[in-house]
Image (cartoon, rainbow, N blue to C red; front, top):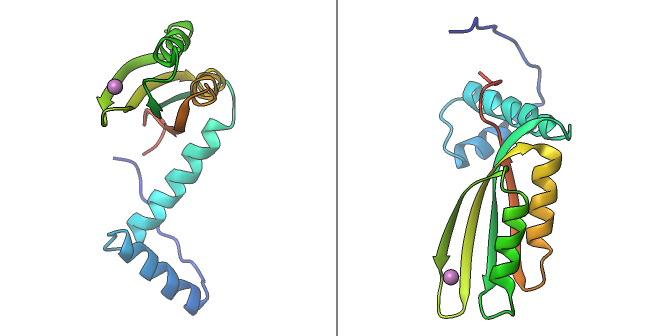
Length: 139
Ligand code: NI
């Protein structure tokens, strides 16, 4: 286990009250864990800024499978980036719409290009890239 450091933080009382309400709403029972998670969040987000950093994440797409050749186009894009695509989950939401979740890993720059290519494909109703970390560098 890593060494712990204790710090004191001076903070405006009103701001602290708002912070406590915020973290209680997210289910935190103590401030320390909330502070740690916020710091990790910022560090992980910062790591995505370098195009060469290694990231993992998901691309979530909603599309109408009746749109002409759309399924083929989305599959073709994933084959172009096959080294970054780990797995795909496909759910038939209703008669027309499909939800696809594509798990990706690789250089941040490449992963963003893949996500942009998928999300900008004509016929995709909504798409979102969610990046996270393999966790190797955070405690
Ligand atoms: Ni489907």
